Figure 1 (cartoon, chains in turn green, red):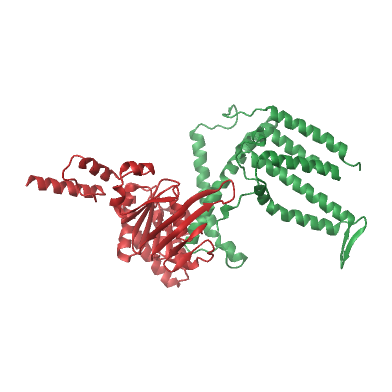
Figure 2 (cartoon, rainbow over the protein chains, first blue to last red; figure 1 turned 90 degrees about the vertical axis):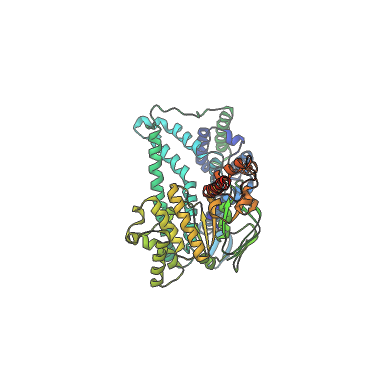
Amino acid sequence: MSSLTHPVLGQYIPGDSPLHRMDPRSKLVFIFIFMMIVFLANNAASYGLLLGMTVLGVQLSGISLSIIIRGLKPILYLISLTAVLHLWLTRGGNVLLQWGPITIYEEGVIQAIWISLRFLILVLMGTLLTLTTSPIDLTDGLERLLSPLSRFQVPVHEYALMMSISLRFIPTLWEEMDKIMKAQRARGADFTRGGLLKRAQSYIPVLIPLFISSFRRAEELALAMEARGYRGGEGRTRIRTLQYRKLDVFLLIVLGCLVVALLWLRSPS
Amino acid sequence: MEIDVQNVTHVYNAGTPFEHTALSNIELKIDSGTFAAMIGATGSGKSTLIQLISGLIVPTSGRIRVGDWEIGPETKDFSELRGRVGVVFQYPEHQLFEETVAKDIAFGPTNLGLSPSKVKERVRHAMEWVGLSEKLASRSPFHLSGGQMRRVAVAGVLAMEPDILVLDEPTAGLDPVGQRELLNRIRDLHQKRRITVILVSHSMEEAARYADQLFVLNRGKKVLEGSPASVFATGEQKLAQWGLEVPEAVQLATRLNERLNPPLANDVLTLEDLEKEIVARWKGDSC
């Protein structure tokens, strides 16, 4: 009954795998480049290589496959929808099946497989990042990677702070919402009956208290930060400094090899 | 209404790395018209247990009987139970949402499908029970003091006229006078309307003063139950193991009894009891 019982896609799971121990910056760089080079793949060998990398990543993360699959469920609908669209709309090659107005071409099948595979690899790698990196590490890494931009008057520290605060408060707000929903349900509120409009209206007794408490929390947080002398990012030192280790160097070497291998394996277009 | 909890286990996030067993194999029975208190340290499973009793969550296994209703892992429809069990959550003022105090209190009874005139009457009564002056009815609940907001929220639950009233740490964050006053009003209501009250608390003082039956929970298990006197007779050391403290008055009485012969009666639970007992002893000795 509680909406809290489902693990959210990519929710951080603490652990001590090689993937957990890597520096968030190298993971971010890897994912960023990886997301781009996925589009280089265009044949069985190159897709096989990428899929192999992904499977290896899942293995190394030490996170059980069932959790990853459960988290992927909502994305699977999207993937199958794209696959169906490609099957239906792509023309080219031999006709494999003709049924009423639907004609399925060879090219369509190949496209559908490649596109859904690409989608799956992208989502899996992205999830691996958030599964093995705590939100704080993630924003810290992002801030450090983007810090050169602050020379161009981009408020990198402030953005990173905003991001980490919002990430930090998602579970809190989620819990708060669950609590308020229970309280209103105990007072006879029903969130499941009636049409769309009625159902939307039934959430008013949840949303108003949620808004009020968010504002209260924001105010309290600002006050607490000021009371502890927070004055923005300039000259601020960190309790946990990020440090590149052998593992990170290794990861970047792997990335380099991956790019070369992909360029070599892909069929020339 | 009688409450019968039979071999109930509740597991949060089953099958994920966040799996957590909040309650295991709980058995307990609360007779109709009892003022019961659930005590236990943080994380002992008190809140989960009352959510199960109020039908807000379903147990992972086991059954809960509340009057004629039965709740099991498969139960889906709780609409009728909702009207019979009222729940005051921790910091209930955080659930207020309406423009006026009266409208907010009317939310529950309106959901029960009562006629507008009936709702109005319920709101008036509920405000009276919690000691809110009628002048406040048209004010915004967000402009009241913390203590008044708490009372509005409690009134919102009382207006549903439940047979069972569940209160989860209702006095948290109130000043001592406010705490005493709120619980005194609940006790009056309990005595006048014979409703069953379940008070969740980690204050042994509160439990000793108001409840006639105590349930002690520790790490998801029921470790002790009985009258306040019998629970406190278990001894300070044992209770400290479960993260609980014996009320001051009981501690003092125990210390005195180490030197007194014959000892004081063991049903001394509050400072007032202790005072009476000592005065009586003093007078008895002097004449």
